[in-house]
Length: 154
Image (cartoon, rainbow, N blue to C red; front, side, top):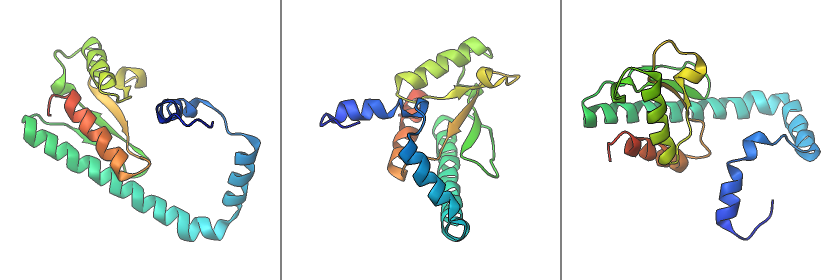
């Protein structure tokens, strides 16, 4: 999409996850994935390095929020992947999925979109899946600040 209006462009980016790739993108992707040496020696090591860095930033952020609030935030340490499960049950008003939905709304009000535990069939309320594979560190930091604000830490 081309538009000189940056607000429209940024708003449109949010919906791109629902759009399948076009033929040109599929061709380019096939060519990239066909370069096994580059994938093995360059892309995969760099991708792992960046994912570890972003994962570690989220874990450091969890520690900061715990210190600031005095509330424990359990999480499941990912050994691989691009997300982390975090338990915000200590920030719920009650131990119910309704309270979890209200916390999800607080995140949404602060421009953070999460998948909450009930949607993932978690047995207890308070779990959220945070995707940390951001475009860049600035975007990740912005997201973490918004989460902090939703939790009442800022």
